[in-house]
Length: 48
Image 1 (cartoon, rainbow, N blue to C red):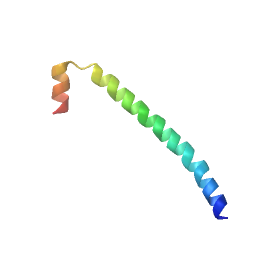
Image 2 (spheres, rainbow, N blue to C red):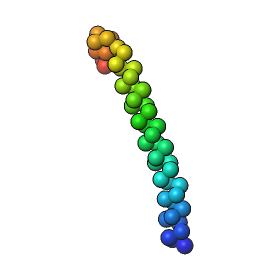
Image 3 (cartoon, rainbow, N blue to C red):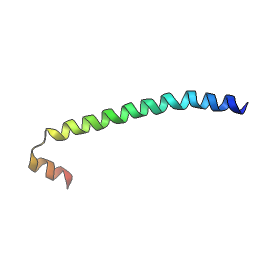
Image 4 (tube, rainbow, N blue to C red):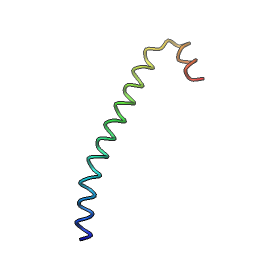
């Protein structure tokens, strides 16, 4: 029974971890794109 619980846990956890990783990459990519559009003074103001 314990090995079945481990297998079921992996089947649930692995896709969730994969989706979370893809989602965090998209957020980081979007954040990088928006910061590239800023001018230098705007960028410095946003960091304060």
